[in-house]
Length: 191
Ligand code: GRF
Image (cartoon, rainbow, N blue to C red; front, side, top):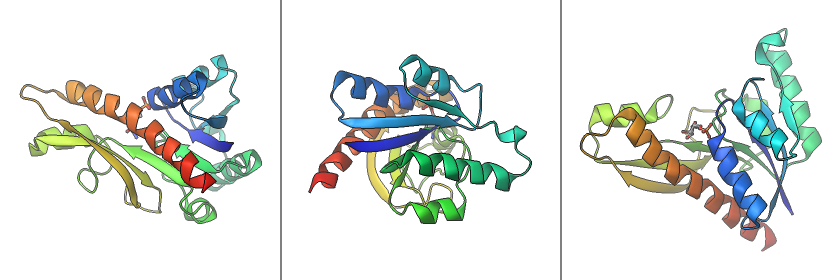
């Protein structure tokens, strides 16, 4: 069965959406662990409650960024994942990590890339005044939200939208799209 390691820094709603589909049997993958750079991340608690290994790597407690990167690399390698799934992971992966997993690291971003990369994709979309936005699942390269696009889902930007209402609409699309992409990867893995 396809194994994934999930990296998340915060709330973990994308992780939870994937987890629910795994638990229901709709998504035949194994979640090897949830790793977080933030020991307070709600994502860790969601994993622990579901009996999935929840691994905190407290970024500030490492002596250097390099020490954190090494711990992360070793933690991920020990899990032997087929895919590394970034779900609200707020750090850029270093080039060694990216090179170690070519087309094996996925990210989800709350805009239709290449528009509005980086932080606050939803706010950027509102400020620009686009009438359609959405989300993107892409492979991770060394850039910020620049890797090859796998799938996208569009949602309308509605009159009166705030950052919150638009983010919520995009988030619903994110939750569906990420699992759809993972499901399609299980199928290509078998071919
Ligand atoms: C999502 O909007 C995702 O697109 C972005 O970070 C947010 C994570 O939310 N990369 P959650 O932690 O999955 O709820």
